[in-house]
Amino acid sequence: MISASSFIGIYRRAVHQTETMLDGWFLGLFARLVFLVVLLPYYINSALTKFDGPLSIADSAYYQIALPAVDAAGGDVSAVSFFPWGLMVFLGSYGEFILPLLLVAGLFTRIAATGMIGFILVQTLTDILVHNVDATTIGALFDRFPDSVILDQRLLWIFPLAYLVVKGAGLLSLDKLLWTLWSNRRNTHEKSGRLSPTA
Image (tube, rainbow, N blue to C red):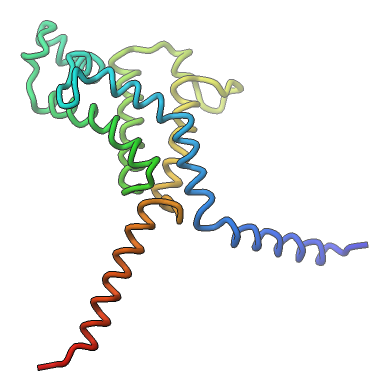
């Protein structure tokens, strides 16, 4: 019969081996894969509704992002001031397209994940304060229903992004590739500087 201390020792070794084996590549890759399969299609499709062409933001973007300003301008999008509303629409439209692609690629991951968290928070406030979604859609925390569109779902959306902000994209990412190339280049320059003759 295995003693309690032996069992704890086996358990700790197994946990340590699992962490050693997966640390550095699995969780960052998994967080990005979750984002890819769950949220990338949603955000890309939403972003496409905000453009008339590659560099032309559609009027619909103003209605989605800056509805109070459009209403104040009598429905005339061209009368909406650039600062702050037009700038917000510009950043929101391009951010919704570019940030998800950076996340999936693992490029500038911490910045992109931070941007996406901010985007989700602004999106949530816009839904609640501007689009006046109902209480059922908003939901509540610590209730027995885990399926509200706003609080439950978006809190779960933020979790893999928070992981990526703290830990980064991991070994299987463009961030790691660029860091490796930059480190190798810096080391090569330092070695060549040490080997070059002094004046």
